[in-house]
Amino acid sequence: MVVGRMFVAGLAITLAQGAHAHGGGLWYPMTVSLCLIQDEQYASLPMGKAFSSEEGFVRWKNDLSPDVRACISQAKPVPARLCKALLAPPPNQRQEKEMLDKLYQQYSLDIDSLGEKLGCKR
Image: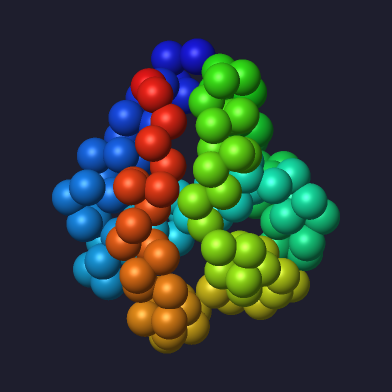
């Protein structure tokens, strides 16, 4: 439960500070994690299967309180089209920086507002 609270707090701080920008690249793992929590169907997509079975993600997800999971699921802060773009590629296809940069540019307004959309209590 502490890890879940720490993640939500860290997520809020990171998003508020703009660490998702190109230099940090932190938007990618945070966005993927939110996608997998906000709609469990994303875990059935090729890259979703890979991420959702990673030990760190499983531990983090299990440590989230039911209230925080429900909040993320209800808020659906990440647009479905972005979740699909991130989680649909086959796992052996590298997530190259150029591809991620293009996705960031395409969805920057959505990514920049994740902290505002989330609003889950820590």
